[in-house]
Image 1 (cartoon, rainbow, N blue to C red):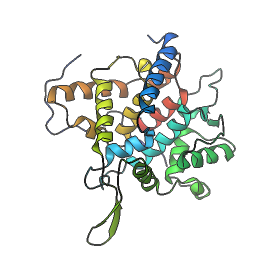
Image 2: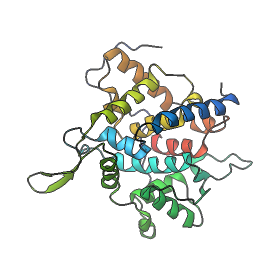
Image 3: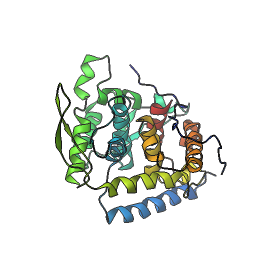
Image 4: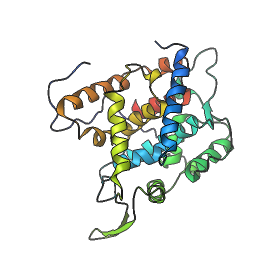
Length: 288
């Protein structure tokens, strides 16, 4: 069963102002992307580096309570999308060649490009499944398999279990969160309140700046990680948490630019120089 998210399904802030502000793909795009990535790598090397999965979970965690919204039923698939893009950005997986007929992104299979361990348990578990699966499967199938949302009982062994808890433990190890036990009348639950809000505030500012002060009006010129984070946070229903602190005017600008990203033709973006095809395939799968 395929999980589908509407492309226009942005959550609107209750206090949003009604006044909206308006504010070429080429070969140099790849060099520009690499330059941005190196700049971010240099910055991240001086601080704790978080994976896309950890960043999306951190955006979703309530600071003091230490858990995600009970009503959020999108974050599970969103986190699996994060895993696939993280593997793609690290050069471990890719899409099979498009062929002469230029098959659409969602019809192309995921191929293991390198089985070199990443050092991250979740990533390596997913990579092992992808490597060992023959014939290869599509991005949509892998999101369903890894999240356990499949009708095929033979594919349930691919499910990555306790992903949120495992990611939260990673955040604890990196000094972002702590671990507590909370009683909810009928049951006890392990929670992970933030111990240092600096990490989350820095993450929120990075997301805000990407659609405000650092907006390029060209996704091919954006850092692949922050571009992926915007799409994945939206699909996981946690992007609103990054925009909520903005003024009404900035909020409207940010939402307008996110809508522009959601309205892109993802197959067309794949054909541009420097594009990461698997990244766009995941984005297409979780936002259409």
